[in-house]
Length: 146
Image (cartoon, rainbow, N blue to C red):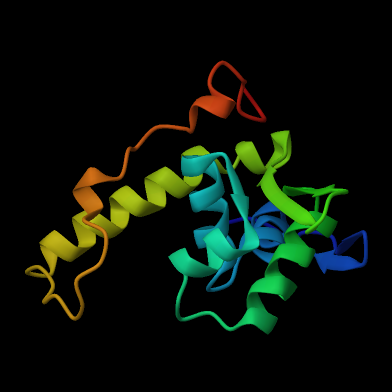
């Protein structure tokens, strides 16, 4: 039996264990999906992310990106040109989550199979054609914690 963890605070977040901290930073409906796409594709503009997540509202996507940036998982790079261009990519901390996201994706695929498969609601990008590896931009970079 384990004892109660001490309550800690980090950058305005109150948590009792590292698991709780990790979930508060990367948890939610959209953050893991945004992080996964950035890990797969390297650099994305807002409109590209929005196209990949058609169900998310502009307000929610903007909010999630700002939180991921504030938490040091996503880098927002503004290019001073006309028209202005903004690109998002993973930081080394964000890159450290990619193996976890791949494991979650694989678990989801196994769960779907174990539950008898799923019925297709709409035709989207075939999941089997999405590469399981990191975008070449991140190749050769160590995951955080390795």
